[in-house]
Image 1 (cartoon, rainbow, N blue to C red):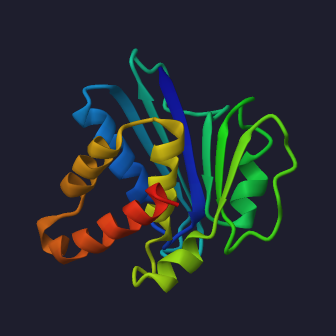
Image 2 (image 1 turned 90 degrees about the vertical axis):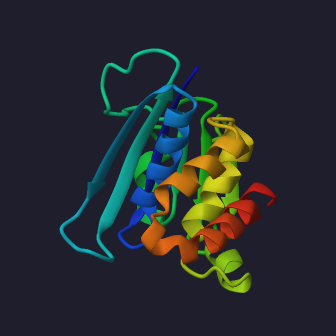
Amino acid sequence: MTSSVIFAGFGGQGILFSGKVLATAGLIEDKEISWLPSYGPEMRGGTANCSVIISDTPIGSPIISVPNVVIAMNRPSLDKYIDVAEKDAFVFYDSSLIDEEVTRKDVKVFPIPATQMANDNGVAGLANMIMLGKMVKESGAVSYDLIMEGLKKVVSAKHADKLEKNIKALDLGYNF
């Protein structure tokens, strides 16, 4: 099995962090993984995307041209990746920030009001983790237990105080 996941949004939305958590979970499971971050020169507000491949077999290239999972945190990202997603791909988008519906009928679409959920549940700024939680539940790219282990490894000791909020956000998405 191979999961080719594109995370996309603006800088500051935790795109690269989400990808790193997913890639770490794949490593823990002893899978072949690739994590390829890409971002504009701006620290916040510029474009950001991250490609993560988790596979049972060696990965030939870190470049994903036809993803089977797309997580779009803003409209430009959804517009960019919706047409290249493979047939039967999982498409997750933040419906708090994206006011359009996906018209493709050959993909599995999950609109999640992640930004609103994060704000309403005391985890503002963690919409990315809500999206990741929902993606883990629906796509089966990795198990819930592995994503939790990955999160615990990626959150540094310096930021240990943020672990509980990240877990809460992940759970909100998983149970949405």
